[in-house]
Amino acid sequence: MNGAGNDFVLIDNRDGSVTLSREQIAKLCHRQRGVGADGLILLRNAKGDGDWAWDFYNADGSDAEMCGNGARCFASYIQHTIGGKGELSFETACGLIRATIGDTTVTVNLTDPHSLELNQSIATSAGEQIVHSLNTGVPHAVLFVNDADAAMVASLGDEIRHHDHFAPAGTNVNFVQTLSPGKIHVRTYERGVGETLACGTGVCASAILAAQLNDWPADVQVTVLGGDTLSVDFESDSEKFSNVQLTGPAQFVFEGTMAV
Image (cartoon, rainbow, N blue to C red; front, side, top):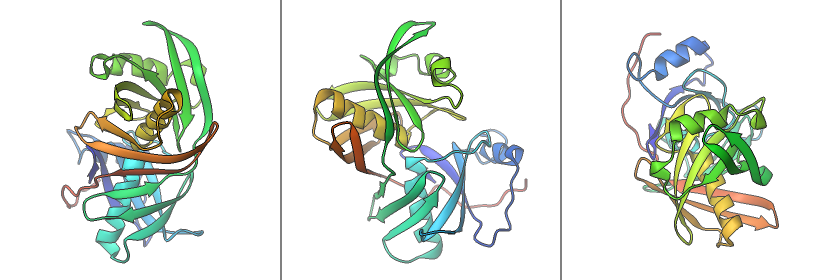
């Protein structure tokens, strides 16, 4: 499946029979030697208050706490696989996620963002950079640039992702261009993946910070490298944010089997 070009391998593991090593996950996600994906998601039975639960992994096989585009795909996958109502919830490493499945889009309510830091100056090989950071389920650094498509996403993104300022966990890195009030363009370098065509939690972090810094209304439209536009809505109280809603597509690509 893919959500705005951010693609995932999804596996039904409700019976608990699937156990994958980090190497096997990386093989499945390899674009030349496997299925090819930005991440892998296992559907499993819930242990707490959710209807279902997931185990989520980055393309390199490392654990990942949260993914907004993956959450939309996962919700649509549950309905496709199991059926049922258009609203559901599932447990993740960062908390309970609620989803509403529409005709062409899926909306997910993310956990409340935290760890807001504004106007941090860090030294890089490209000079001093002013970055802002916010955790929207996973940590994100945000840089506002004049032209996101001209930004050094691969090189500078990788450098900031591993920067001592964000040690030891590291951070995802977003390059954000303001298109007009309430509308931005984002490119994201993700931990464990590299640049992706879209990043849901990055889109949310970028939209919230853009609205916060520019005093925009909460509904922000975000175009991503894959060409899609996602919508981010939220509530804010000073520097606290809640009820973050991410709306966008979730599309099936194919189904099949692969030996690992």
